[in-house]
Amino acid sequence: MTENGDRLRYLKIIMAAGGGYEMFMGLTMIFFIGWFFRLLGAGDEIRYQMFPGSVGVLAVCFGLLLLLGSRDPERYLLVALVSILLRVLIQVPIITGCLQTPELTLPLIGFGAFDLAFAALTAHAIRASGIDWEKF
Image 1 (cartoon, rainbow, N blue to C red):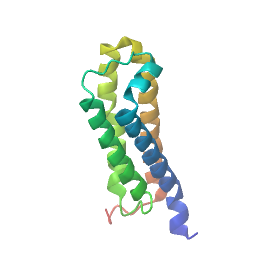
Image 2 (cartoon, rainbow, N blue to C red):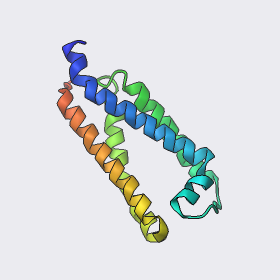
Image 3 (cartoon, rainbow, N blue to C red):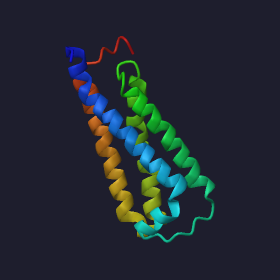
Image 4 (cartoon, rainbow, N blue to C red):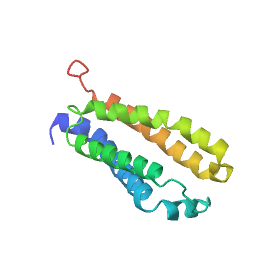
C-alpha cells in the first residue's frame, strides 16, 4: 500500500463502518420498526409508519454515500464532514425523545453516545489522515 493509502486507511475503515451502521439502522426503520420498538420496550404501536420509514430511507441513502465515499476519502471528504455534523445534531432529537418517551431513555442515550463516539473517531481519522485542505 502506498504512503497515501496507509494514512487514509483509518478514515476508509471508519467511513465504511459508519455506512454499514447507517444502512443497517435505516433498513431496520423501514422494515422492522415494530419489532425494534418492542425490543427497546416501547411497544409496537406506530401511528404513522411514513415517518420512521422516511428516516430509514434517508439513513440508507446516507449509508450508501459513506460506503462509496470510503473508497476515496480525499475526494469525498465532505461526506465524512457531514457525517460528523449529522451525528452531533442528532443529539437534539435524541434528548427530545428521552423527554417525550421516558421508557426509551436508556436505549436513546446508548444510540446518542454511539453517534458522538463515531463523530469523534471520524474527526480523529480526518485529522490523522493529513488530508490537504487546499484540495477541499
